[in-house]
Length: 334
Image (cartoon, rainbow, N blue to C red; front, side):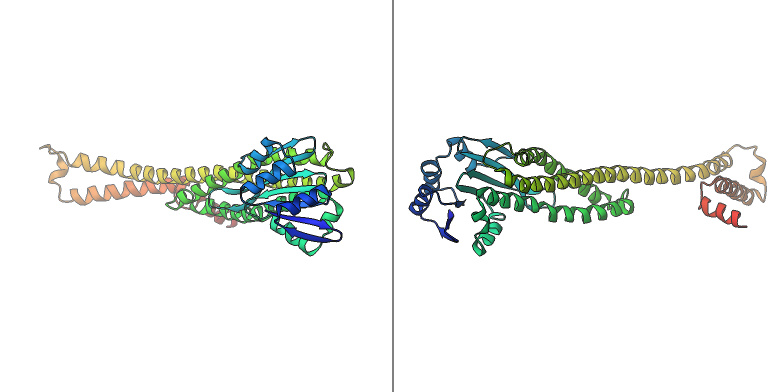
Protein backbone atom coordinates (compact mmCIF):
# COMPACT_ATOMS: atom_id res chain seq x y z
CA UNK A 1 0.00 0.00 0.00
CA UNK A 2 1.51 3.29 -1.13
CA UNK A 3 -0.04 6.72 -0.68
CA UNK A 4 1.01 9.88 -2.49
CA UNK A 5 -0.08 13.02 -0.63
CA UNK A 6 -0.08 16.49 -2.12
CA UNK A 7 1.64 18.72 0.41
CA UNK A 8 1.80 22.23 -0.98
CA UNK A 9 3.59 21.98 -4.33
CA UNK A 10 5.26 18.62 -3.73
CA UNK A 11 4.30 14.97 -3.48
CA UNK A 12 4.96 13.06 -0.27
CA UNK A 13 4.96 9.27 -0.61
CA UNK A 14 4.21 7.18 2.48
CA UNK A 15 3.01 3.77 3.60
CA UNK A 16 2.29 4.86 7.16
CA UNK A 17 -1.37 4.43 8.08
CA UNK A 18 -1.29 7.25 10.62
CA UNK A 19 0.10 9.73 8.07
CA UNK A 20 -2.57 8.74 5.56
CA UNK A 21 -5.26 9.18 8.21
CA UNK A 22 -3.90 12.61 9.15
CA UNK A 23 -3.78 13.74 5.53
CA UNK A 24 -7.36 12.59 5.01
CA UNK A 25 -8.54 14.48 8.10
CA UNK A 26 -6.78 17.62 6.85
CA UNK A 27 -8.50 17.11 3.47
CA UNK A 28 -5.27 16.94 1.54
CA UNK A 29 -5.42 15.33 -1.88
CA UNK A 30 -4.36 11.71 -1.64
CA UNK A 31 -3.80 8.87 -4.08
CA UNK A 32 -3.63 5.42 -2.49
CA UNK A 33 -2.36 2.46 -4.50
CA UNK A 34 -3.51 -0.80 -2.96
CA UNK A 35 -1.25 -3.76 -3.51
CA UNK A 36 -1.70 -6.93 -1.50
CA UNK A 37 -4.73 -7.69 0.63
CA UNK A 38 -3.79 -6.97 4.23
CA UNK A 39 -5.35 -6.11 7.57
CA UNK A 40 -3.91 -2.58 7.41
CA UNK A 41 -5.43 -2.03 3.97
CA UNK A 42 -8.84 -3.17 5.19
CA UNK A 43 -8.61 -0.82 8.17
CA UNK A 44 -7.70 2.04 5.87
CA UNK A 45 -10.64 1.42 3.54
CA UNK A 46 -13.15 0.80 6.32
CA UNK A 47 -12.15 3.17 9.13
CA UNK A 48 -10.47 6.04 7.29
CA UNK A 49 -12.19 6.30 3.94
CA UNK A 50 -15.39 4.64 5.20
CA UNK A 51 -16.04 2.59 2.09
CA UNK A 52 -19.07 0.34 1.92
CA UNK A 53 -18.35 -3.32 2.83
CA UNK A 54 -19.52 -4.42 -0.63
CA UNK A 55 -17.03 -2.02 -2.22
CA UNK A 56 -14.21 -3.41 -0.10
CA UNK A 57 -15.24 -6.94 -1.06
CA UNK A 58 -15.26 -6.06 -4.76
CA UNK A 59 -11.88 -4.33 -4.54
CA UNK A 60 -10.17 -7.52 -3.38
CA UNK A 61 -12.11 -9.92 -5.59
CA UNK A 62 -11.85 -10.48 -9.34
CA UNK A 63 -14.81 -9.61 -11.56
CA UNK A 64 -15.20 -10.68 -15.15
CA UNK A 65 -17.25 -7.61 -16.12
CA UNK A 66 -16.75 -3.85 -15.61
CA UNK A 67 -19.16 -2.05 -13.29
CA UNK A 68 -19.85 1.35 -11.76
CA UNK A 69 -21.49 2.15 -8.40
CA UNK A 70 -22.40 5.64 -7.23
CA UNK A 71 -22.34 6.02 -3.44
CA UNK A 72 -23.04 9.15 -1.39
CA UNK A 73 -19.39 10.04 -0.77
CA UNK A 74 -17.55 8.36 -3.63
CA UNK A 75 -17.79 6.73 -7.05
CA UNK A 76 -16.59 3.14 -7.48
CA UNK A 77 -15.53 1.99 -10.96
CA UNK A 78 -14.17 -1.31 -12.25
CA UNK A 79 -12.63 -1.25 -15.70
CA UNK A 80 -10.40 -3.61 -17.67
CA UNK A 81 -7.25 -3.04 -19.63
CA UNK A 82 -5.02 -5.63 -21.30
CA UNK A 83 -1.94 -6.91 -19.52
CA UNK A 84 -0.84 -9.36 -22.21
CA UNK A 85 -2.04 -11.57 -25.02
CA UNK A 86 -1.26 -15.26 -25.02
CA UNK A 87 -1.66 -17.59 -27.97
CA UNK A 88 -5.38 -18.16 -27.58
CA UNK A 89 -6.74 -15.44 -25.28
CA UNK A 90 -6.34 -12.00 -23.80
CA UNK A 91 -5.01 -11.51 -20.30
CA UNK A 92 -7.34 -8.80 -18.97
CA UNK A 93 -6.12 -6.32 -16.39
CA UNK A 94 -8.74 -5.37 -13.76
CA UNK A 95 -8.43 -1.91 -12.23
CA UNK A 96 -10.54 -0.84 -9.26
CA UNK A 97 -10.95 2.93 -8.91
CA UNK A 98 -12.57 4.77 -5.99
CA UNK A 99 -13.08 8.49 -6.70
CA UNK A 100 -13.75 10.63 -3.66
CA UNK A 101 -13.81 14.36 -3.07
CA UNK A 102 -10.17 14.57 -1.93
CA UNK A 103 -8.85 11.07 -2.53
CA UNK A 104 -8.36 8.44 -5.22
CA UNK A 105 -7.95 4.75 -4.37
CA UNK A 106 -6.80 2.31 -7.05
CA UNK A 107 -6.16 -1.41 -7.04
CA UNK A 108 -4.07 -2.45 -10.01
CA UNK A 109 -2.91 -6.00 -9.31
CA UNK A 110 -0.08 -5.98 -11.85
CA UNK A 111 0.79 -2.30 -11.48
CA UNK A 112 0.93 -1.85 -15.25
CA UNK A 113 -1.24 1.27 -15.28
CA UNK A 114 -0.70 2.68 -11.78
CA UNK A 115 3.08 2.52 -12.15
CA UNK A 116 2.98 4.69 -15.29
CA UNK A 117 0.77 7.32 -13.65
CA UNK A 118 2.80 7.13 -10.44
CA UNK A 119 6.03 7.77 -12.33
CA UNK A 120 4.49 10.82 -13.97
CA UNK A 121 3.22 12.06 -10.62
CA UNK A 122 6.64 11.59 -9.01
CA UNK A 123 8.16 13.85 -11.66
CA UNK A 124 5.44 16.49 -11.42
CA UNK A 125 2.50 16.97 -9.01
CA UNK A 126 0.44 18.58 -11.77
CA UNK A 127 -2.25 15.87 -11.88
CA UNK A 128 -2.98 16.02 -8.15
CA UNK A 129 -2.83 19.80 -8.21
CA UNK A 130 -5.53 19.87 -10.88
CA UNK A 131 -7.75 17.60 -8.82
CA UNK A 132 -8.78 14.01 -8.14
CA UNK A 133 -11.00 13.72 -11.29
CA UNK A 134 -8.00 14.51 -13.50
CA UNK A 135 -5.90 11.89 -11.75
CA UNK A 136 -8.70 9.35 -12.23
CA UNK A 137 -8.86 10.35 -15.89
CA UNK A 138 -5.14 9.66 -16.25
CA UNK A 139 -5.62 6.12 -14.87
CA UNK A 140 -8.55 5.47 -17.23
CA UNK A 141 -6.63 6.89 -20.17
CA UNK A 142 -3.61 4.65 -19.53
CA UNK A 143 -5.85 1.59 -19.25
CA UNK A 144 -7.52 2.33 -22.59
CA UNK A 145 -4.17 3.05 -24.23
CA UNK A 146 -3.04 -0.51 -23.48
CA UNK A 147 -5.49 -1.82 -26.06
CA UNK A 148 -3.78 -0.27 -29.08
CA UNK A 149 -0.52 -2.32 -29.07
CA UNK A 150 -2.56 -5.53 -28.89
CA UNK A 151 -4.84 -4.38 -31.73
CA UNK A 152 -1.80 -3.46 -33.84
CA UNK A 153 -0.42 -6.94 -33.24
CA UNK A 154 -3.77 -8.44 -34.22
CA UNK A 155 -3.76 -6.38 -37.42
CA UNK A 156 -0.45 -7.90 -38.55
CA UNK A 157 -1.52 -11.41 -37.57
CA UNK A 158 -4.91 -11.17 -39.31
CA UNK A 159 -3.20 -9.99 -42.50
CA UNK A 160 -0.81 -12.95 -42.36
CA UNK A 161 -3.74 -15.23 -41.57
CA UNK A 162 -5.53 -14.25 -44.78
CA UNK A 163 -2.41 -15.13 -46.78
CA UNK A 164 -2.03 -18.49 -45.03
CA UNK A 165 -5.68 -19.37 -45.64
CA UNK A 166 -5.23 -19.17 -49.41
CA UNK A 167 -1.91 -21.03 -49.32
CA UNK A 168 -2.58 -23.78 -46.78
CA UNK A 169 -6.32 -24.44 -46.55
CA UNK A 170 -7.09 -27.98 -47.63
CA UNK A 171 -3.49 -29.14 -47.12
CA UNK A 172 -1.75 -30.92 -44.26
CA UNK A 173 -0.80 -27.54 -42.78
CA UNK A 174 -4.40 -26.37 -42.88
CA UNK A 175 -5.24 -27.62 -39.38
CA UNK A 176 -2.84 -25.15 -37.79
CA UNK A 177 -4.39 -22.33 -39.81
CA UNK A 178 -7.88 -23.37 -38.68
CA UNK A 179 -6.70 -23.48 -35.06
CA UNK A 180 -5.35 -19.93 -35.43
CA UNK A 181 -8.67 -18.73 -36.87
CA UNK A 182 -10.61 -20.21 -33.95
CA UNK A 183 -8.10 -18.71 -31.52
CA UNK A 184 -8.65 -15.29 -33.06
CA UNK A 185 -12.42 -15.73 -32.75
CA UNK A 186 -12.13 -16.54 -29.04
CA UNK A 187 -9.82 -13.58 -28.45
CA UNK A 188 -12.10 -11.11 -30.18
CA UNK A 189 -15.19 -12.57 -28.53
CA UNK A 190 -13.62 -12.05 -25.08
CA UNK A 191 -12.74 -8.50 -26.06
CA UNK A 192 -16.26 -7.80 -27.30
CA UNK A 193 -17.93 -9.31 -24.23
CA UNK A 194 -15.94 -7.06 -21.93
CA UNK A 195 -15.97 -3.91 -24.07
CA UNK A 196 -19.78 -3.75 -24.33
CA UNK A 197 -20.12 -3.04 -20.59
CA UNK A 198 -17.01 -0.89 -20.35
CA UNK A 199 -18.15 1.32 -23.21
CA UNK A 200 -21.39 2.04 -21.33
CA UNK A 201 -19.46 2.96 -18.18
CA UNK A 202 -17.17 5.37 -20.04
CA UNK A 203 -20.20 6.87 -21.78
CA UNK A 204 -21.88 7.60 -18.44
CA UNK A 205 -18.68 9.19 -17.15
CA UNK A 206 -18.38 11.32 -20.29
CA UNK A 207 -21.97 12.56 -19.96
CA UNK A 208 -21.46 13.96 -16.48
CA UNK A 209 -23.94 11.62 -14.78
CA UNK A 210 -21.97 11.69 -11.52
CA UNK A 211 -21.26 14.57 -9.18
CA UNK A 212 -17.68 13.40 -8.57
CA UNK A 213 -16.81 14.44 -12.13
CA UNK A 214 -16.95 18.27 -12.44
CA UNK A 215 -18.13 19.87 -15.72
CA UNK A 216 -14.64 21.13 -16.60
CA UNK A 217 -13.28 17.55 -16.51
CA UNK A 218 -16.03 16.04 -18.67
CA UNK A 219 -14.28 16.80 -22.02
CA UNK A 220 -11.30 14.74 -20.87
CA UNK A 221 -13.53 11.78 -20.01
CA UNK A 222 -15.30 12.22 -23.32
CA UNK A 223 -11.93 11.90 -25.05
CA UNK A 224 -11.32 8.56 -23.27
CA UNK A 225 -14.75 7.37 -24.36
CA UNK A 226 -14.10 8.37 -27.99
CA UNK A 227 -10.77 6.57 -27.89
CA UNK A 228 -12.36 3.41 -26.53
CA UNK A 229 -15.17 3.67 -29.08
CA UNK A 230 -12.61 3.67 -31.90
CA UNK A 231 -11.02 0.61 -30.34
CA UNK A 232 -14.43 -1.08 -30.39
CA UNK A 233 -14.87 -0.28 -34.07
CA UNK A 234 -11.42 -1.65 -34.88
CA UNK A 235 -12.11 -4.84 -32.90
CA UNK A 236 -15.46 -5.31 -34.68
CA UNK A 237 -13.68 -4.91 -38.01
CA UNK A 238 -11.25 -7.66 -37.01
CA UNK A 239 -14.17 -9.90 -36.06
CA UNK A 240 -15.58 -9.47 -39.56
CA UNK A 241 -12.16 -10.18 -41.11
CA UNK A 242 -11.70 -13.34 -39.05
CA UNK A 243 -15.23 -14.52 -39.93
CA UNK A 244 -14.43 -13.89 -43.60
CA UNK A 245 -11.14 -15.78 -43.19
CA UNK A 246 -13.05 -18.76 -41.78
CA UNK A 247 -15.49 -18.68 -44.71
CA UNK A 248 -12.56 -18.41 -47.13
CA UNK A 249 -10.83 -21.33 -45.42
CA UNK A 250 -13.88 -23.56 -45.81
CA UNK A 251 -14.35 -22.42 -49.41
CA UNK A 252 -10.73 -23.06 -50.38
CA UNK A 253 -10.79 -26.41 -48.61
CA UNK A 254 -13.98 -27.34 -50.47
CA UNK A 255 -12.50 -26.26 -53.81
CA UNK A 256 -9.38 -28.33 -53.25
CA UNK A 257 -11.49 -31.28 -52.25
CA UNK A 258 -13.48 -30.83 -55.46
CA UNK A 259 -10.23 -30.87 -57.43
CA UNK A 260 -9.26 -34.15 -55.79
CA UNK A 261 -12.67 -35.65 -56.52
CA UNK A 262 -12.49 -34.36 -60.09
CA UNK A 263 -9.08 -35.98 -60.62
CA UNK A 264 -10.27 -39.30 -59.23
CA UNK A 265 -13.41 -39.11 -61.38
CA UNK A 266 -11.37 -38.51 -64.55
CA UNK A 267 -9.10 -41.43 -63.73
CA UNK A 268 -12.12 -43.65 -63.11
CA UNK A 269 -13.75 -42.50 -66.34
CA UNK A 270 -10.62 -43.33 -68.34
CA UNK A 271 -10.14 -46.70 -66.68
CA UNK A 272 -13.77 -47.81 -66.97
CA UNK A 273 -13.79 -48.57 -70.76
CA UNK A 274 -10.31 -50.07 -70.49
CA UNK A 275 -11.55 -52.39 -67.77
CA UNK A 276 -14.52 -53.28 -69.97
CA UNK A 277 -12.25 -54.21 -72.92
CA UNK A 278 -9.95 -56.23 -70.69
CA UNK A 279 -12.98 -57.98 -69.20
CA UNK A 280 -14.41 -58.89 -72.61
CA UNK A 281 -11.17 -60.42 -73.79
CA UNK A 282 -10.57 -62.06 -70.47
CA UNK A 283 -13.64 -64.33 -70.86
CA UNK A 284 -12.76 -68.00 -71.43
CA UNK A 285 -15.35 -68.89 -74.06
CA UNK A 286 -14.18 -71.52 -76.55
CA UNK A 287 -15.50 -69.82 -79.69
CA UNK A 288 -13.96 -66.34 -79.52
CA UNK A 289 -12.31 -65.58 -82.91
CA UNK A 290 -9.85 -63.06 -81.49
CA UNK A 291 -8.33 -65.68 -79.18
CA UNK A 292 -6.83 -67.50 -82.14
CA UNK A 293 -5.80 -64.34 -83.97
CA UNK A 294 -2.07 -63.62 -84.16
CA UNK A 295 -2.58 -59.85 -83.70
CA UNK A 296 -5.34 -60.14 -81.11
CA UNK A 297 -3.21 -59.07 -78.13
CA UNK A 298 -1.65 -56.02 -79.85
CA UNK A 299 -5.10 -55.13 -81.20
CA UNK A 300 -6.59 -55.14 -77.69
CA UNK A 301 -3.79 -52.93 -76.33
CA UNK A 302 -4.08 -50.54 -79.28
CA UNK A 303 -7.86 -50.36 -78.79
CA UNK A 304 -7.33 -49.48 -75.13
CA UNK A 305 -4.82 -46.77 -76.04
CA UNK A 306 -7.14 -45.29 -78.68
CA UNK A 307 -10.11 -45.26 -76.31
CA UNK A 308 -8.06 -43.73 -73.47
CA UNK A 309 -6.56 -41.13 -75.79
CA UNK A 310 -9.96 -40.24 -77.20
CA UNK A 311 -11.43 -39.75 -73.73
CA UNK A 312 -8.51 -37.57 -72.65
CA UNK A 313 -8.80 -35.43 -75.79
CA UNK A 314 -12.53 -35.02 -75.15
CA UNK A 315 -11.86 -33.94 -71.56
CA UNK A 316 -9.22 -31.50 -72.75
CA UNK A 317 -11.61 -30.03 -75.29
CA UNK A 318 -14.23 -29.54 -72.57
CA UNK A 319 -11.66 -27.86 -70.34
CA UNK A 320 -11.55 -30.60 -67.72
CA UNK A 321 -7.81 -31.09 -68.25
CA UNK A 322 -5.07 -28.50 -68.46
CA UNK A 323 -5.45 -24.74 -68.30
CA UNK A 324 -8.53 -23.97 -70.37
CA UNK A 325 -8.23 -20.23 -69.82
CA UNK A 326 -4.65 -20.15 -71.07
CA UNK A 327 -5.59 -22.07 -74.23
CA UNK A 328 -8.54 -19.76 -74.87
CA UNK A 329 -6.30 -16.71 -74.41
CA UNK A 330 -3.77 -18.18 -76.83
CA UNK A 331 -6.51 -18.80 -79.43
CA UNK A 332 -7.79 -15.24 -79.01
CA UNK A 333 -4.31 -13.82 -79.54
CA UNK A 334 -3.88 -15.94 -82.68
